[in-house]
Image (cartoon, rainbow, N blue to C red; front, side, top):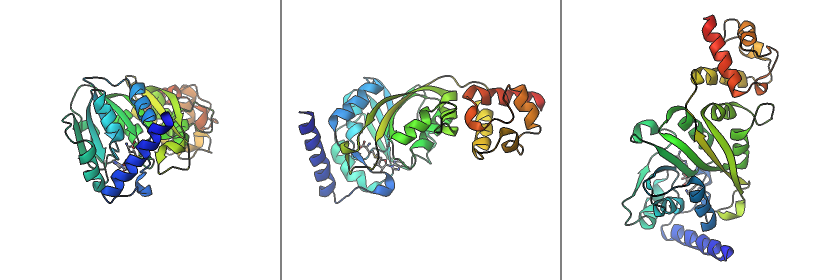
Length: 277
Ligand code: SAM
């Protein structure tokens, strides 16, 4: 039964694209979700209901956009590819609860565009800009208080990693400082048209109020992860006046490497650097 629905959805998307003379572009990360069971599961996971405001990045052929609107949400969806305009006009015809904006979501000031109150980000993110958008929204778009996003599995691993793991890096620090994140479920390549090479995963991040000095902590982590193999006392030499003293004051071993420092450690280091200045 689930397989029949998926086969039908796949045929419908192929037909829709063909009728509008369009074909998926790999360079834009166009792997369209072609299984209604997964689409519905994403909407359920996001807990989207009437009255919710949702921003979607990468409307594609409008599958998730329509499902979010069907759940009762007001949806603002960004799409970079103008060639999908007629496709989206057909799929979303007659819906006044959906606004599609043709723009590069990586360049749009989402914080300025989304009017006050709270929003959810729900999206099957384009792989090339996905991580950047998640981190940018966490850092600079406070009105998005929750996100449920599909990304490549390896991106999910990096967003969710804890200190000491090979996947732990700047993305994990930003997520750890701004929210509570969890892996909701994984998604096999077969449910997309065309099929990507790798597994995907749906991640949920709930925002927590940003701790003081989170931007300073992120700047320090960025400098250190930029030279990941080096000891912190060396990688932070150009950034802190006396890295050894600041690291010690923050309770961090100056010979440690950035992957050893948890998000709170970067905050403690930012506080120590501030006290020393
Ligand atoms: N939501 C659709 C779905 O689930 O089938 C499409 C998802 S597809 C993985 C990603 C979509 O993001 C594509 O339609 C692509 O054209 C669009 N896209 C790529 N880069 C973008 C950007 N910088 N801003 C907005 N949309 C972008």
